[in-house]
Length: 152
Image 1 (spheres, rainbow, N blue to C red):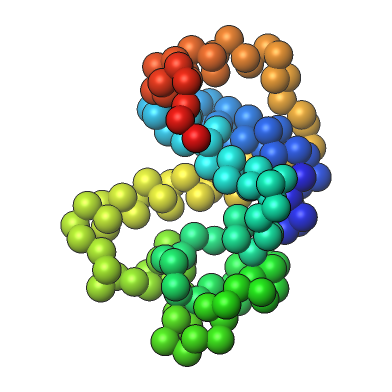
Image 2 (cartoon, one colour; image 1 turned 120 degrees about the vertical axis):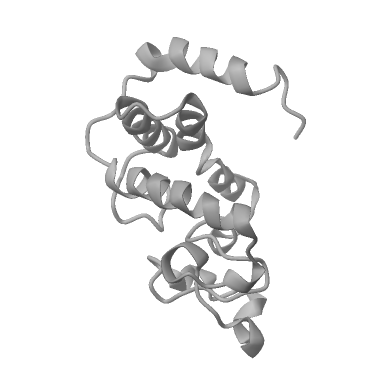
C-alpha cells in the first residue's frame, strides 16, 4: 500500500494492473502497457528501508525541489535537498520546468508522459483486477520485453 496515494486503498500490484489494463483497453502499444505495469515498482523499496520521500511523488531531477502541488509533499521533509535554495524549482511534466535541461527527444517524450499520466491518475477504482486471469497476458508481455532473469 502507498500511504501517499489518497486515491486508492488497493495494493500496488492491483494499481499497476488497473493502470496497465486501462492502457491496453485503449489500444496503446504493448510497450506502453508494460510501462503501466512497471511504473510504480520502485515503491517496493520502502519494504527494504527506503523512506517514503525517496520513492513516491512526482518525478523531479535529483538535486531539485518538489512542487507543493505534489500530493503529500510533506513526505519529502527529510530530504536534505529541501534546505538548498538553488534546488527550489518545480516538476517537469506539470510546470514545464527544467526545459533548459531538455533536448528535442525529451520534448518529444513529453507527449507520452502526459498521455501516461491520465492512466496513472484516472484508472484508479475500487474494483480489483483478476490477477490470475490476467497472468497469461502479462507473462507473455514480460517475455517479449524483459530478459528471463533480471539483474538487480
